[in-house]
Image (tube, rainbow, N blue to C red; front, side):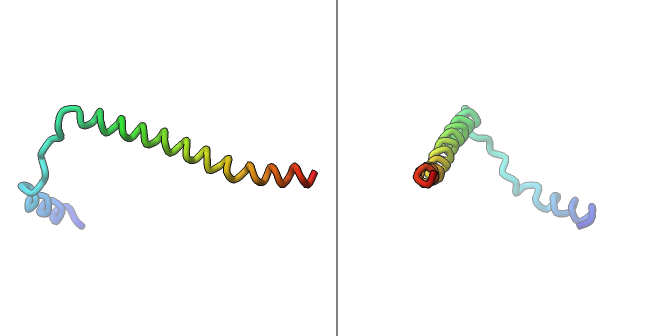
Length: 64
C-alpha cells in the first residue's frame, strides 16, 4: 500500500475512530487483574511440573 492510499484511508476513517476514554482507575484495575493472573499461572505451572516428576522419581527410586 503506497503513502497516498494510506493517507486516503485514514482521511476516510477520520470520524470513525473510537475516542472514548475508560473510567477513572481502569488502568490500575486492569494491571491488578493482569498481575493476579500471572501469579495464578505460575503456581499452576509449578503444580504441573511437580505432577510430572513425582511419579518418575518414585519409579526411578524403585529401580535403584
